Length: 408
Ligand SMILES: [Zn+2]
Image (cartoon, rainbow, N blue to C red):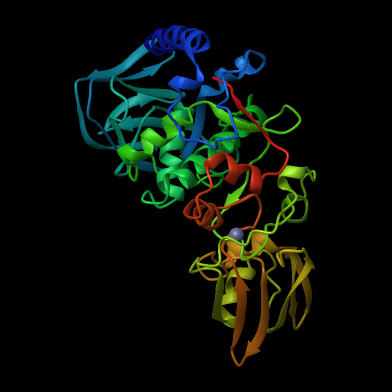
């Protein structure tokens, strides 16, 4: 803990210096990100400077597990409060376990309370074969009541490293730099929003909110792109907002209110896209066996059997539906359309913009786009970039009425 605190204090001191230097030296001429000619690059805004504390983020990596494989390729420490439990120069791959209320690594007992795993070098910790930038927190039963003997692992890292990992997981790294810059600002805005919304929670975000695979897919070019947009977020009404994004809208993005029942604000109200028709997911169709559908749907209603129709309801201007009605022999079940898509499998039912027809023992889904359809359309962003639009123009197109701020 002491080591961690000292490290954090050092990091914080360095941050103060960097921010101070940036506030004093940042000028238009030193800004290297190519942006729209009409737009001036944002400077760090003093009013929002307190948000630099959002630089640290706690990401839930694994939840309710019994064991995981851990390796550390630099000097490291396992600590509990101020006590160093184990330390060493390198940790060959070992089994990390939580058994009978006690953590152990490589068979060595560590204790029952929360444990921190601190590596000297960023990116030295490997968990189940994936490298991570930050330090780890091992927490017994982070979701209470999910079973004794299980634990969860949270990574404490900084937002910029996290964003590099997210971009590497969310977008092909060889896409246009302008599309990747737009994606970096989008993911950062979403992460800062999550950080703010869950400020007092055990963790701020998880792998379900944004795909994140640590350093696994990260490329040097992505780090450069993320760094070029460092600290830049989108604001509406002077606030960060949940800047959703998805693969392909299929023609028009949808209102967050319809899909997620959130407040309808101009940046998340939906727009005509028109840039994603080269996406291989623009049109799709799939046939799914009824028994396979019923097996999955029984997890929400055990009575579902003999399905004879699946109907999208609450359809928005982009054809994405809010709810899905499942008609079966014993009645009708209505569920959130996005939850339905994720339950059945987003590789099959790619979006909620679909129609269905019965095909013997199967149901045929014919749809458009991939993802929930809210916010930035990634293929659309790539389409705009290929037509010469800059990242700021892309963002202002998909999120109308936003302001751009550099918050650290
Ligand atoms: Zn689109």
